[in-house]
Amino acid sequence: MKARSGRRKKKVAFQGERGAFSEEAARKLLGPAVVVVPCQRFEDVFRSLEQRKTDAAVIPIENTLHGSVHENYDHLLHFDLPIVGETKIRIVHHLIAPADVPFAKLRRVYSHPVALNQCLSFFAKNRQLEQVPFYDTAGSVKMIMSERPPDAAAIASEVAAEIYGAKILRRSIEDDRQNFTRFFLLHRPGKNRSRAPRAGKNAEWKTSVVFTTRNVPGALFRSLSAFSLRDLNLAKIESRPLRGKPWEYLFYLDFIGRVDEPTSQNALRHLGELADLLRVLGSYPRGD
Image 1 (cartoon, rainbow, N blue to C red):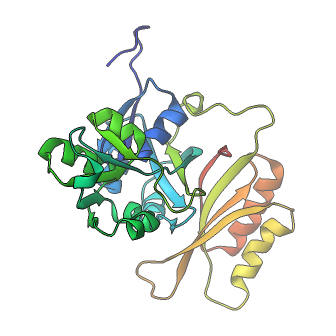
Image 2: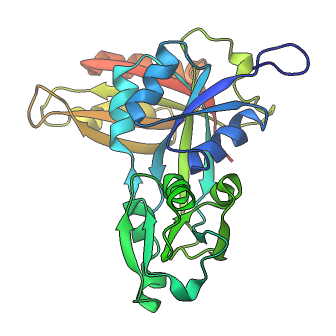
């Protein structure tokens, strides 16, 4: 597919069906003109970019209510696809149904288990409604619009309702309005950084790394001191099991700073002297 200027439109992969929150994140990061490529699994998203089937990929990495998406942390280690941007999307859940299905007739509500669990107050007030887990929020809207069950609705985004021609019966039924998901934008190594989101002159940057240390007293403390000694602020630290080495761990860490700044380079050099493994996963403008 080509834009009017003759240049091919960028293709971006994400997990889920059209209308997923990941699609909203992709358009926020790369603009409304991108061609979105839905994938069934997170691993498919990474492979699509690695195999040059797409130009970029967008993945969720953490949610303010449910924590980190651990599978994607594992994929960031196994695939050499650098992080070049991030954004945050407010998660707003709507009750969605075909236009001819009124609220009074509803008995079943389909959605991803996480979305269902984020709307428990709504279900407590409407006990006639059965929660039915489905593989995807937007996919649940696609299904009810295709199969047209007379007593079923779905929970998903407003964009999903628009894409599949459904009606929103109840808006913003999530329990917590401070429900945000953070997304990463990935490119292939060496890909022109001008295609990543442009940062303002005074934009704050983040750098994400993964490292391991020996399992000895004080090893993690000394590793983190590489940043504290240089007044670098840590934005997040996450541990994941190190496969093949029971009870040993990988540490994923975000700090505020650009990887090409002298202070950051000195901290990473210091950490590299202490770590058994150290890899920079990406350096990117901090999301709004």
